[in-house]
Image 1 (cartoon, one colour):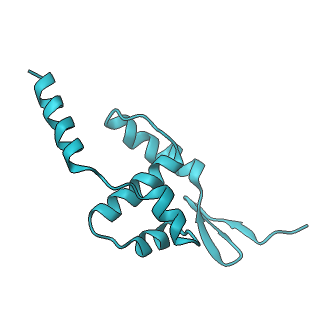
Image 2: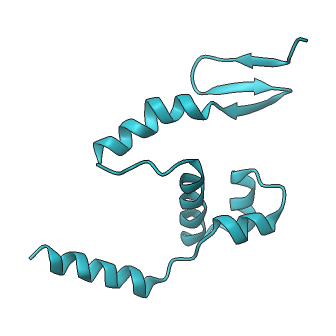
Length: 103
């Protein structure tokens, strides 16, 4: 059975007229190296997408835009599972703790 799946050089492939990311290759070549350079652990694709969604929302992107970027068909999935609103009082407390523990 022949499939309409054409791999391209790099991180993308085409399937039935749509382009998709080759996640395994991009994580191995780009993301892992970037995280190692700044000494951060890899937590997986869900964490990456959740972080992206939360940060986009934090800088003012409407949830509908975030939904489109993540390619979710249902807006409630994006709102309930991916967008996590930052509590600035908690972030400030963590910042104060970090500054205090370095002294």
